[in-house]
Length: 470
Image (cartoon, rainbow, N blue to C red; front, top):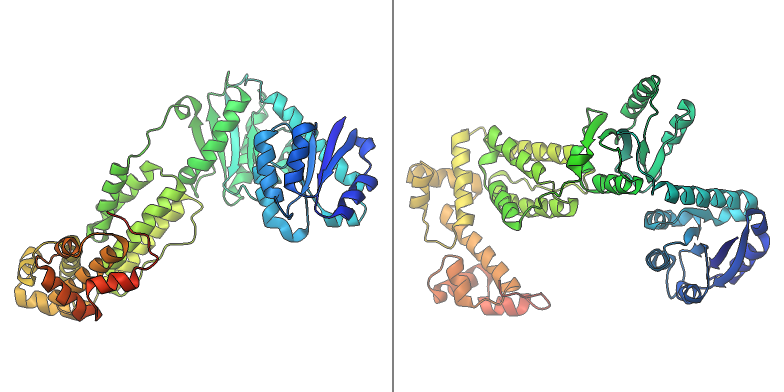
């Protein structure tokens, strides 16, 4: 007997479900009810429940929070969501957290009680069989994983293919399937047909798995979920529908990237040479891909680089670089880098100046940012970028819109503002770290540029900001 509990803040809904659903026809019995997640947890602590039906929008403790608690503390309980159609985003979250199905309340209004319960009963049977299968080991060495990064909304074309081909696939996770073809000559034809079908599905890939023999199902399934979460982003090839994984290699511990190596790569990208040198540009992209950073860390790195690039290239291009809202696969990151580089180069390419001159001015801007704490002058910079003093000054002013000394002063003052707002460093320390050895001269220059002294700027603009000593 499957013991059922119903959680919904609407008493009429609870009573309606208890009285109207044909529970006995599917070996089920309602043993409890609650009006919110907190009361449901109290009941579960002292009563046996196998199936929990819960609403999502409830006071005190929401359905989502209840699902998280139940999945952690009562792992044996199956969860089904009660919801309205407009709660679809919450449904996705609930399924991701482990709910096995959902009931749209409109289905109940149409009195499809038996159909709904039969579907839930079959889902429980599938989950129970799946739990037993997970303890088995693979007796063949080769298999195929079908996967898509889209793990929010189920795409069940795989079921249709299995039905047409009279084959069985295991649903490891949402849009993640595993197929171990039988040792028959016709399996090659099935594989060919499956490969062709995958090639028509955007964002899907077929992965050849080698080394399954003797491995527990649960371990392979766990590896596949981890692979989709961490590595599939980098491996997916838009032009190829088949990849390959050797499980012996996959199971080896992977080297984690140190902050030092990430900072080193950030430094390389923060320069300007990759704009002009194709081989260096490719080296930087290949090095970043090989790091296989988690997507959140990758996005953080890209945002940091954009800040650097806008400081470096905007003065000479007047083009502001932006990051896309999201990337589904690495090849999109690759395309973004290429498009960003082309955008910068096209904006920098000015018909009145040669590429050599533009490269020299970009280098001068780079030096202004990187060495602002040192004593640098236009004469010194002109020599370093291989231009005469007068021609450098002329070109810099025409391209950037101000002479080098004014630009350097602007860079230093802007950096000083950051130090004032986000650190507790002394005015003297700030002055020295933006290139002014005389605190009074720095304060006077700062006031000329901002109409207030550094201390006043920190006092009036820094209210409510988090300060640090670094």
